[in-house]
Image 1 (cartoon, rainbow, N blue to C red):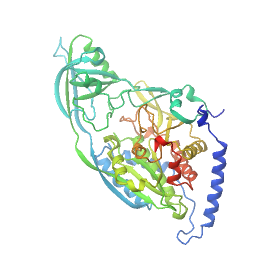
Image 2: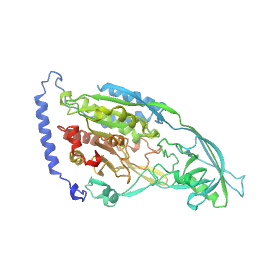
Image 3: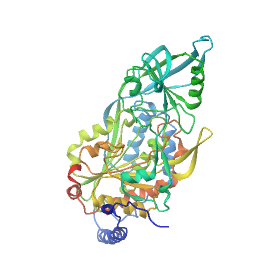
Image 4: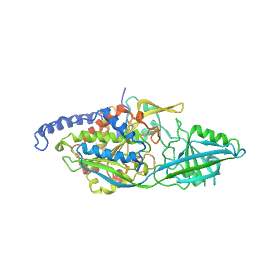
Length: 500
């Protein structure tokens, strides 16, 4: 079995050199630690430890047990307070809850009734979910029409929503490096949690003059709980999601001839105050590394992003047990608010912390420790395998080398190191909650997976890929250690001019 890497010559991997440098780094670090062991400021301590996997899973379980974690919901408020408490217990300094205004989504009812115009008394009630950020309250009766058939003016447009499936041979073309020791990328396909329209699922219907949207989720399992769009941009028509089998019922009525539908929805989208949770561990230098994730989620959401919270807490625990003089950098910890309400938490943090961002070596965002799932007979079934791992990394050789070395060291197969812009095609930043840092000129390493169930209520504790929690945590520490001796200025000097 060999290592399969990018064929681009300019990105050819140099495995032996990073390993040698890593080994030499550990020797130097050990010598420095030995020399500093008598430091008056920091008495001798036991080696730092990661939390046990069971502890991390218990954190995730505790968070998900609180319920739906959208901004402004009680479960999200609980999570804000609990994570701040954990930061304080770990000895982080300057722990604060920094306010963020967010437009949240609070659905209360959704009803869909359909009938054939030749038999209007024979109505069928269909289960549905009110599409986020569409008309808040509506009770309308409209004729039905397939968007694909053309004229939907003044009608309820029926639209098939099929998730993107990408062959990994195509994804390799977007990557600068990849780690695929078994060669499975050559035949592997990944189903993403988006249609080709990403957030703009309603826009074709709106542009065609439709008065309502009915999205039929043609995905590998039965669901109507699809929390997309989540950009907090209000759409001017009501919309509902229905499952594939329910869509078949609706279309069976339409097959009889002209048909009508009653769409009745009621939701609110209040502006609420939520909070970024922040804390600091001072280090040997004022140059900093930021560890981030977000604390909200579309549902109770174990992967999105209770797992990310656990990864950030693991870094906080580990580095809190390293004496200040031996921490290579000052560490900032940020759990951002309202990712699924248009990302205002990320924007607020970047705006409020401009001064410190100039001294940031890298922003490390940690999201989604996901288990690959399969759809079987309309049910999501977890496998033993991890989902494909994306590592969006600024194109600094030092950063890419550090990420590559750590991935290989920890055996994190199914990994792609991707530049911070260009995927999805035409974008200026990666599809992560850390993208705002990249747009602000901060070097990034953003870890993300994109399982197909990411925005569904089926994102439950069994979807977390438990065996990955510690290897990913160890890999992040390895990345940081390999950057020891670098400065914010030295990393930025390596970036291509267009990325500055």
